[in-house]
Image 1: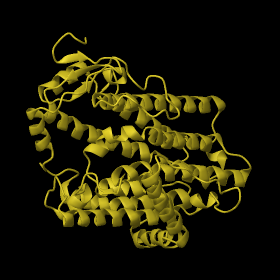
Image 2 (image 1 turned 90 degrees about the vertical axis):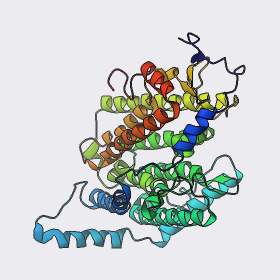
Image 3 (image 1 turned 90 degrees about the horizontal axis):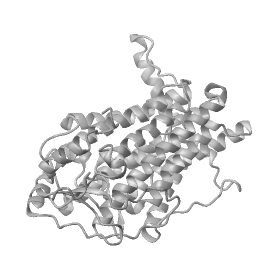
Image 4 (image 1 turned 45 degrees about the horizontal axis):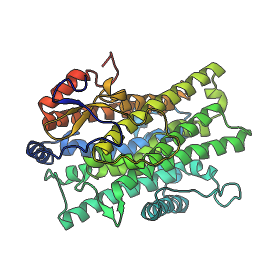
Amino acid sequence: MAGSSSDLRQRKAVGTMQSQSPTTDEGRKSDKLLDEHHGYEFGGPWGVTAMMVGFPILMYYLWICLWFYDGKLVAPSSVDDIIPFLQRMWTHVREDAYPNAYAWKVYSGLIIYQLFLAWVMPGFQQEALHYYHIFRLTEIINNYGHLMSVAMIYGFAVSFGVYFLTVATGNQIRMSGNFIYDVFMGACLNPRIGPVDLKMWAEVRIPWVIVFFLAVSGGCHQYEQYGYVTPNMAFMILATWLYLNACGKGEECIPQTWDMYHEKWGFMVIFWNFAGVPFTYVYSVVYMASHHPDKYRFSTPTYVLLFTVLLTAYYIWDTSMSQKSRFKMQTQGITTFRKTFPQLPGGTLKNPKYIQTAHGNRLLISGWWKYSRKPNYVADWVMSFCWGVIIGRATAIPYFYSVFFITVLIHRCGRDFERCSVKYGKDWERYCEIVKYKFIPGVY
């Protein structure tokens, strides 16, 4: 198909390609239009207020159900029990999730440590202190509630602090004029402290480090209790490591993503990175750390199937993200990439097909991207579903991640496709004719 028309071309091989055409006047007009506020999302001010209040309450509730009620979704037994029920819930928060000194020390230490590394180093390192009893990894999962409370405080404080600082310095963009809505969506795009892009730092170096060490802590907790680590917990340690390692090894590709170049740094992104991701995505680890392995034991073939699905989905997710990001980088003249581990085959496309748009950008239609407009989303969701399936039917709570995630992805796709329609016009229609399926090829 490449070379068959003026608007559908094939890029030259890596190393000999031409840089992308500069943004045209038409493209600049559409970009300016997209950088203006055109209407409310998420139900407007009332909707975002409900989410800002509701998310922390939901996070406490699900954790309480997992840790104290055998993973059951508890509720008042009668109308007369509503007040006592709420009092019981509050007692758990007050006694088992108050922001204690340990939580402040560990969470704040991580923030400072990762900010320092982002300033002076391209990656991060972690000292092995568990063996010498200097820092007991089991204490992380045992202080889950306390750490979650501190993370929430950070999420709210940073969200409001960044908003007021941005407005005070006159750097706000795409504002609606409604205070609470603009706090939720954000006022600035890429705030910095020296050389550190705070949005990228918070997206990569905070949530996934916590997620991984919560899983490791759960494994240590199991080993101390039973003398072994279950395949289920080993699965979660591997799954969280794969995600964390992918964020680290592909860090140079992240500026090409939607979160970086379009989403503003507001409560929606800040709270979720500081508290939402690390303390809602690993409910399976919380359950396994507080329940006997007999409640979630599988047969060997089932474990083989689960690990196979995880690794297959990871391969598709990793290589599709790499294909898209490196394609964008190469069109900008960047042809040298970091040799980080693991570099999977198929991560960099040679002679890929693309549509040259009137805007000046190029739309990739090769690799995984010729089958689906969002192949990375499909693979990412499959991994999230596996994170719940690993405890089987013991409790429904760990499936929160995949249910929430598919809701976010569908909403984000709607926003993204609408934005692309405005930005690329007829070129987008041409792209949709070639890449027919939004998610699953042949299905949807």
